[in-house]
Image 1 (cartoon, helix red, strand yellow):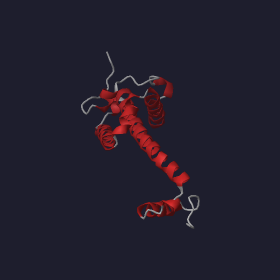
Image 2 (cartoon, rainbow, N blue to C red):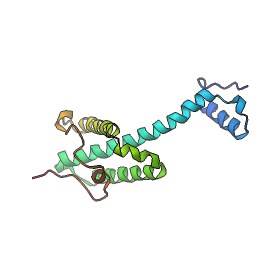
Image 3 (cartoon, helix red, strand yellow):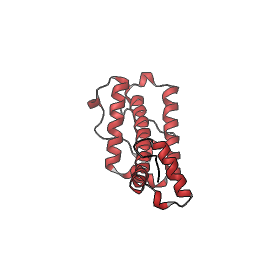
Image 4 (cartoon, rainbow, N blue to C red):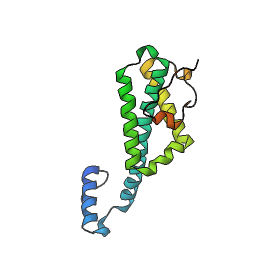
Amino acid sequence: MSTITYESDIVAWANEQATLLRTKQFALLDIEHLAEEIADVGKSEQRELASRMAVLQCHLLKWLYQPARQGTSWQLTIKTQRERIKRRLKQTPSLKYCLSDSDWLADAWDDARDLTEKETAIPYDKFPESCPWTIDEVLSNDWLPSMKA
């Protein structure tokens, strides 16, 4: 039986569990914690995607609300986040459902508004309650928001 517990050292525990799986010592596996960790992998992927979306939308908001500060740095951040989101979706196609999940999108938008407020001092409630752009616009390589005349 193992002397390494999930609670005492999660990294050592994970390595041991992997060894037990590879050597087919199934009776020694910590099934309860393994199931929990496997479920958390999906949640972690969703959190990363949401974080990247929030950063992207934050920079799109800054682009829109602070035109005098538009510059290469913001453009590079927008480009980088778009590329990383697309790469994540390619590597994990099941995450694409997030882009059509209204609750997920609303949470990402709220995070973007929070982040933009912190980075600009523009009050949270000055930004639209819901994202005014389509997901295609947000992820389009050649699209940037502009104030409508």
